[in-house]
Length: 260
Length: 260
Image (tube, rainbow over all chains, first blue to last red; front, top):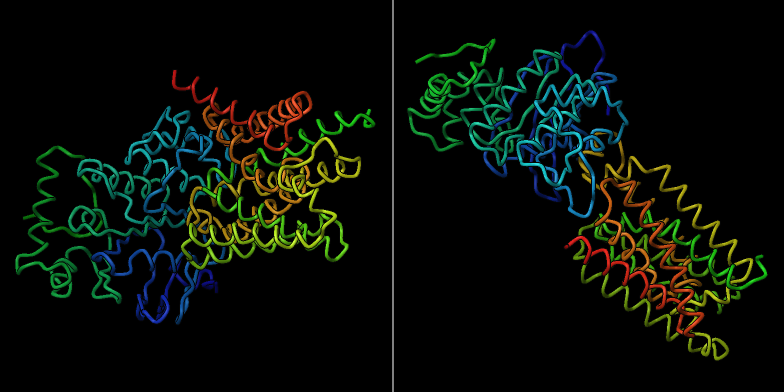
């Protein structure tokens, strides 16, 4: 994978006119994007829109048919997969899992578990974790590599709304504490938007992108998610208010908000 | 000491379990049971090939087992319906091997030793080959251990960490072919897969970490080998099946114990 020249570029990773095909089927068409240091970017799209494919192409798991993917030289990426099926036939606890594939010290493991709110869960068997706990452990493992860029594939799938809000809050904390950029995939609309600096709307190609507020008013975005004229902005505002009313932790964003 | 055929047989059984223990753990974790069968059954064809070309039996079985394992791994990577494909390949290899061997009248009477093993007839050379092969497999698995565990848990996670899951799969394929070649004399082609799966499955119920499971599988394999040897010696039963009978009894005992 070609490297981005250091210093001259602000971005950590970039896609330039990337196309990905499965056989004759073009799943991604002419994708260009850049992720800058420290920003939280969410890729939003319906099922089958190529979100996971895009992330896997950026990670270098899938080959690109056209275009290219550029990375800053020596870029450290932490990857949190969509889900991890730990087969019941494999006995492995959280502490041991954190040492894959690079062994880490007990001190580092304890510290990272505390950071994701999983203190004391080291001896727990992986197969016995709940969905939310598993996501936090996967995040902890990704953080151990001191990533400059975190990539998360639908990290809150299978979590209830409170768990979801808590997880995004954690992501923001991590960004603040480590300065890592975050690239997330989601198919839910409002909660994730509240936690993002920038949203990229995907449906095989990039439909629209911008701050959550700009995207949520874009006609392409509404058409994609079948929203009416009031659309997601109302939903988004509503959810934001709802958060406050429920006494959930206030998310401080450095992007603009429309408080209704 | 090595003059005693019983000592040689015991050492062969213990030596083999050094390889079947950890490899068996991967066979269980990755659900490769049928894969092991196909590779082991191909060894019979390898015997016929070696007889026809006057090559050493071990070389013939190693070559054909390797060819079979690489074929199967290649097909599975291309997304074939593995259950059916492996069924066709495993049984065809066995049938072709048996038919081919029948063209060598001198071996016909000896056929059962290839199918069920003939551990009581292990020579010094055989013993050296068993230990060399097993230690090679053990060293290979120990060297790739972290990468193998990671790609067994999640190929995407491995990929994102710079590990090539296809290469790790090849490591297991080569290890499997080596084990088949050295285990033929000890347990015979029909029951090699049993020696991979049963001790590892027994160890699963007792272990809390991947390493403990592999280590326990070695121990249980060695105990089964020695126990089966005793059974075979005192009751004049075929050695391969006797070893597997003891392994199965240990499995039943541990399954009963963990239920209580």
